[in-house]
Image (cartoon, rainbow, N blue to C red; front, side, top):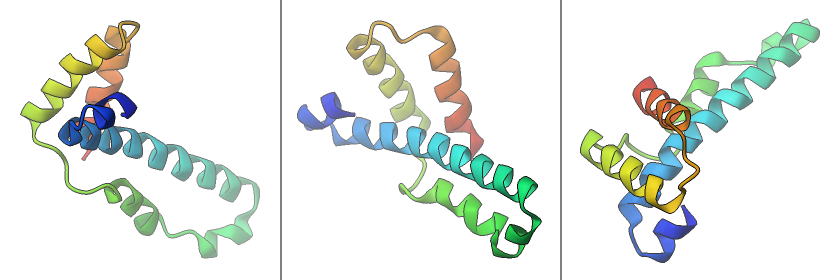
Length: 96
């Protein structure tokens, strides 16, 4: 994201934030669910619907053309970006 931001390519920065925020939201939800498994008293405070809303924190889903452009540019910026990484990004993008 830093490279996109420095290049004033805010569309690409938005795609990066969007895709990574979905992953972060999933991680946080999974952590909270693990706490609930260990302490049933926490169930009353856990609202799965509210937690799922974290996935929408960074705006609207970018158009697929923009996402595809992001993948191509990201591969140039980060040559170590593997096909597995690409598939993970696509999976996150397609989640919502």
